[in-house]
Structure formats: C-alpha cells, structure tokens
Length: 302
View 1 (cartoon, rainbow, N blue to C red):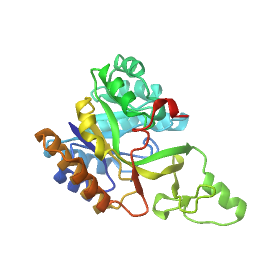
View 2 (tube, rainbow, N blue to C red):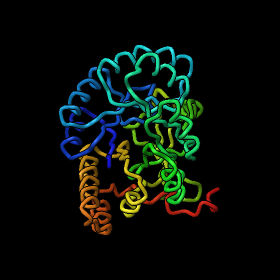
View 3 (cartoon, rainbow, N blue to C red):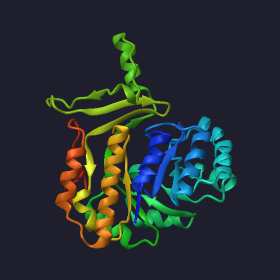
View 4 (tube, one colour):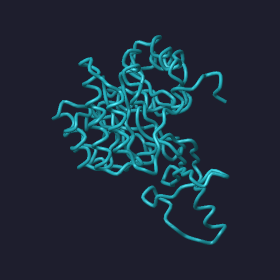
C-alpha cells in the first residue's frame, strides 16, 4: 500500500514524511498541472534527498498540456531530474514520454492523461511502452475502478482525498473577464476566488489562474475514507491525497489520519466511522466531503 501526497513547501515535505506518507508528489510549472506550489530544481533535489533518507519516494509531475514552447524547455529539466535521481514521472503526452526516454531513461513514468484514463486496455497499451502505473480518471465508479485493476499487473492510483478539477483552459479566463469589466485583481490560487452555480448561493467552485491557464474545481472535496477497506480488498493500494486547497498544517494532519487508516486496514482493525468522524473534524467548513463518482451507478453518469 502506498500513500501519495502533494507538497506546498520544504517544511511540509518533511512533516509529511514524518507523518508516514510513502511518496511525495511535486513539480514545476509549466510542466506539471495544479500543483500547490511550483518548486525550483534545487528544492526538488533537497526534497528527493529528504525522501530517500527516510526510505520514501518522490514523483515529479509532467502532466501539463505541452505546446511547442513547453516541449522545447523540457529536455534540460529532464536531464537535471535524472541527475537528481527522482523516482518517477507522471505524464500522458506521448511527446513527453519520448523525451523522457531520451533524456531521463533511468526514471520510469506513470501514465496520467487526466480524464482519459478510463479502461484497462488503454493502460495496458502504455504499459507496453514503459508505464509502471497509471492515474485513474476521477470520474470512475467503484465497480469500474475494481474492474480496471483486476485486469492489470501494474498499480492504479485513485484520489482518496482532495478536490476535483472540473474545467481547465489554457486561456486566462478570469483575467479576460477583468479586462472587460475594467478591474485588475490577483487571480492566483492564494487569492481564493470562487464561482457560484446559478440559483445556488451556497455553492463555491474555487477558480484560479497560473502559468498553465485557468482551473475550476468542484464544490466538494472527495473523501473515500468510508471505502478504503473496499479499495484495499479490490487491489487498489495507491492512494492519492491532494492538498492544493488545504492549509499546510491541516493537510499534514489529514495525511496522518490516512496513514493511521492504512495501518488499521493492514492490521484488520479498521472502523470506517471512527476515521470518517476524525476527517470531518479536520475538514475546512466551507468544503464539504463527498465520494464523488465512486458511489454512482455507471448507467446514470452523463
């Protein structure tokens, strides 16, 4: 079993490793999408040493939507990461995969094409091209996830905690709107902007812009805490925690809770209600917890 967590600082990386997280997930803009922070190569090197000293691993995100400009910038970044000795990349762009093979052949990749990763046959294809794992789309149901893993020999990663991106555009949508209404305000993640659903004044869809474009998230955070034992029994043992909308210290506490849940499952003493209540107490009041697509009937997903 492996718990993977995003990172927003060197200090948090150390705290997450101390909490028992198995793999840190980091990256640099514009090569990685929706990262809590874009890290320099020096910082990635320091975190890699930190992780390896703790007997843990580090994955670098290369899951951005690469245009010609980004592709041209990628080779020196890959060469530097190869020298640093990171443990894996995530990527879904075939062009990126070719460059990984050329400039960082020692480092395996995990297939991550966002919403497109929805079948075992697709993952098998990329396994024949070197993939050592895959990140499943967030829009899959419990039966679909179990069925996909049952036909594979490589692990699939499932988001068990964190927000889901429901829209991404390479365009600066908020900035364009500000130009129309003649205002100029910060549109970054730190600003905390959000949209509302029509006729629902309580809805809050976080939105922000960065170098890779505009990102809009769902109103709820996914929590599969009630279903961790089921995931484990179905062979789903790579669990992702995404803290992009979490405060630093709060996310560390949430990670500790999932590490505790993992240990309880391995010991055969897992009580879902106990962990659900603990997570609810740590959750930001403005962000509800929900299972996302996991509990839906596949025939009802439109």
